[in-house]
Image 1 (cartoon, helix red, strand yellow):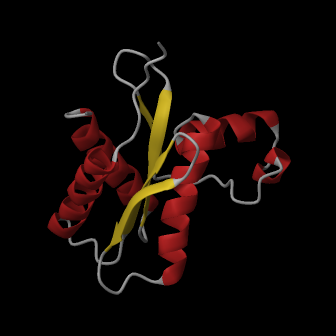
Image 2 (tube, rainbow, N blue to C red; image 1 turned 60 degrees about the horizontal axis):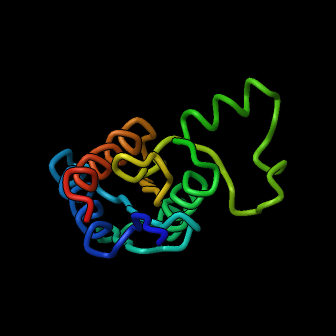
Length: 142
């Protein structure tokens, strides 16, 4: 029998809540958080009140990109730059690279089970909040 860990809604919502709580504590204002599964399909999403549409879309795009490439976006961007590549070379119009996207891996298996994307107005904060969400998720993967 083939058994693998998957991203479930309960875990995804815990990650979203952790990121939004941390954003609120830091006075981040508008921020959006997305969690996707290993196919890049949206599992959970939330945003602070007043968050503009572009931030919402970018959070989902960041999560999608991390999931589909199997790499945290900082690493993905650095590797692309090292090779002189652009995101358009992936033949997927939704792939992009920026800070604030992290891969979620199965405990003990290392397989990608999803990703988290955060978009606000500060890329260092996006990255920090994505890692807060990841820590909350990894603390209790079902």
